[in-house]
Image (cartoon, one colour):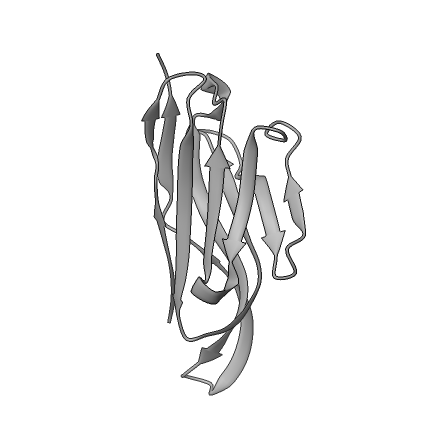
Length: 125
């Protein structure tokens, strides 16, 4: 079983900063990529930033130069440093991992997408 546990959401004023973190645990063999997505009511989940196991990053245009994704491969963690937050950044943020894990039912290595439970980020004065 694989779990992704997020931390770091909360309420912040416009112009402020927050740091989100996510740790993956369980029967993980390797993690190909980790990322952060966000979702607002009535809208689809959208990519915020993503980082591969080689360190290549991809940031949505709306957060470039404000948000920075980083990863600690040894600890299976991914972080998102969010600076100069604005009200449009208000959303539930979800951690995602594209990983290979050991499945005890089939005794096989499987590659799957896993999601965290989501953490609320609210930017408001």
